[in-house]
Length: 445
Image (cartoon, rainbow, N blue to C red; front, side, top):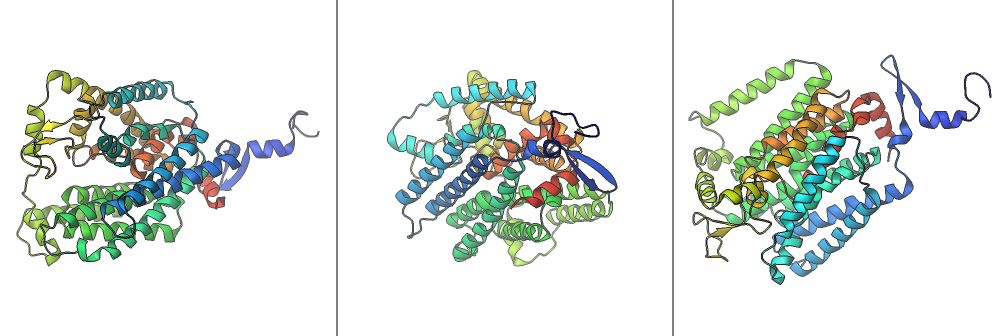
């Protein structure tokens, strides 16, 4: 061997362990092999995300009452998708952490989640089936945090971005197929409200994550993500879905923050400020807007939450506040009655942090925040790349969203949330330069 290369280390091995990349006048040291997925991991990652697509697609198909796929067939497809995700997760996940703090808090969180699930009260067949096949309120959301154990491989990120693009296509297909329903001029059409909320929540809204990490995507993919967001925003405005509108607009604001951080430009600050001032002024004035805003304006002062929150708080004991009521926890709420249940008992409250408390109490909420808050801090202020900062903003927004919506369901949004947590707690991921991440992602197919 010549030069300074040790006799026991080949030049090829050194090249694999440490790649030299030239970028922006700097030499970047990049341990590429640490982030390269093996063949078995590549296969498992593909199975994982295609299983997720099958679950989300079949669930949304099931709620539309279509004549193509019967409810039984939709549940069968969900079962297949779930088996795919479980199988691939077993192959991918390892109980290893770069952060001792995260290991301790995550272990506490998952043990307590199992306690919540174990406090099951209704063991009837229909109830158990609903818990398995309802990705929003069933048993699946309690296992999503395990996604923090997914390997931090760039192929995983690439497949996640690809899956978001697939969801964007599915959103367009559904809104076109059910356009007459979601664009119905009858504002009291509850079916239209349910459809657009599910189409947006399952497919469109998660796509906006791509805008938070836009520098790693192609121009075409970013344009597509922005188009999906605008189309979703149109239907949300038309149907006056104020909570979902807030989520979409603030995510766009988060993308604007990422743009400012990366480009160090101030012009967008002015543009965002003008937009926010205009948006606020519209709601405080009598400006005549196009007809698509009529229903939204008629609901601007409508309060649909206070009554439910009052009844929920009145039905909670001290023990309930601390430990919650378990996975089947309900509260008496005669304000909104389920046609199929005239007892006045509800198992859902649309205020996100109260939903967590209803099931797991302040204890679950506290552990949840003790995991997320340090993660967003590390991602935003202790990182050298847009990936970590975008993940930090994503986590920050998810905490903000704990008031207007439920943030603990099962889907790609919450899976991305826990993947983001893992990235933000990883010192190695946070310290990678953008040029290295972009170069690696560009080489992946």
